[in-house]
Amino acid sequence: MKTSLTSIAVALCAAAALARAPNYDEAKVAPYSLEDPLAFADGRRLKDASEWPARRKEILGIFAREMYGQPPPAPEKVVAELREEGSTLAGLAIRRQYRMWFRADKSGPFVDWLLVLPNRIAGTFPETNDVRVACENREKAPVVLMLNFRGNHAVLDDVEVPLTEGGWFRDDGSGGRGQKESDRGALRRSQSRSTVPAEYIVSRGYALLTACYAQVSPDVEVKKGDPEELAYTHVFELWPRRDESRTDNTTALGAWAWALSRGLDLVERIPEADAAKSVVTGCSRLGKAALLAAARDERFAVCVPNQTGGGGVPLAKRDFGENVSTEMAMFPHWYCRAYAKYIDNEQAMKFDQHLLVAAIAPRALLVEGFNNGWFDAKGEWLSCRAASPVWEFLGKEGLPKGEFPDNYDSSCIGAHLGYVRRGGQHGISGYDWRWMLDFADRVFAR
Image (cartoon, rainbow, N blue to C red; front, side, top):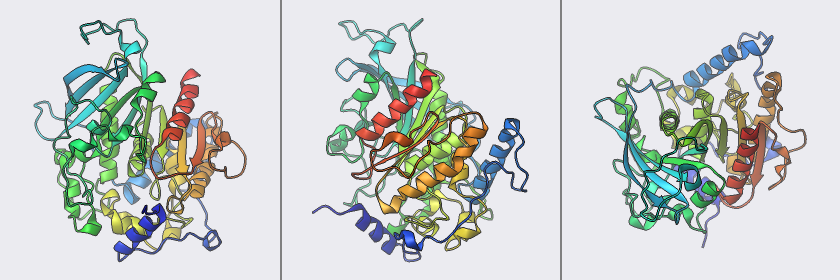
């Protein structure tokens, strides 16, 4: 018997003894006010577009102090080593596997990246399957960047893609934390709630670059007794020791966002890839990471966060679905300690998620939601609506006018800012991928 996502969410809340039960009744949403994204914290209105960078910096500073922690420092050096290359997807693509270190001597933590590159971009494989193909004067492929939950071997069936090394994985329900051979190609299976359809992405002319988030920072489960301190290992070893007297230490979400920027560093070194045409995406907690990465790193041209839930796109002050209490009880490593003062006190916040959404302007943003109360689809749409004036202020089209769209209604997808939602289960699906790449196509065609 299948368990509904709502019942799972309720069970998670019950497991977190200190969490406030989520509200699923629109009639209980109290009045709230939102800060003007086009006014500085001291109340001064922006005069013109030249002042937006200063306001954007101010917004990012607020989120660094109050929610996501300070951004990690830049790496000493990014060293990327090509470890394997071959044909994949029945000759339609090239598979490349890179190991990335962050020190010149290749000591310390590393992240393994899997690149799937359209063969028509990189060249034609001869009968010998020799993949050393010159790419001078060839078209470059736009790139989708994302972190995955299950390991790179879940993206392709190829036996050449090894199980992820050096990752600490969440309990799979059986007490096991390692990776399994049975997960090979799992993200291509028709019954998977989340899919990464490599063939489809390649057929649209895009390359895919992905890494497993478990190699970046362990996603502990404090409700099951995992020590929170374990979250601050792996890439955290690169940075100064955490100062426990601070309330704005770097968080797991900050680390995952940082890793996405390192992926873009790699894209800039790949001659067949167009780093200026990058799409950063992710689902659920990794959708939050994609949103934060794009907000902090202006090199990302398009951001498509998928089903982020509370702490991502939805408005916190609306107090619908996931709330600050549940976030801090179940996922304290995602947020800094300063955020805890807003437990049962969201109205005291001098910011809300629409400001983080606005920090991506004037670049392109498509928010993808789905019809489940825990994830507050309406709160996502309202967040986009509240951020929309920034795009207009900067000379771009904002969110299309109209009411909260129905499931599968794409009329709220604009030229630079859009919102769309669907039914079904939690996860990034074929619908989401089609909306995402259609949106990116239009952005890159301009």
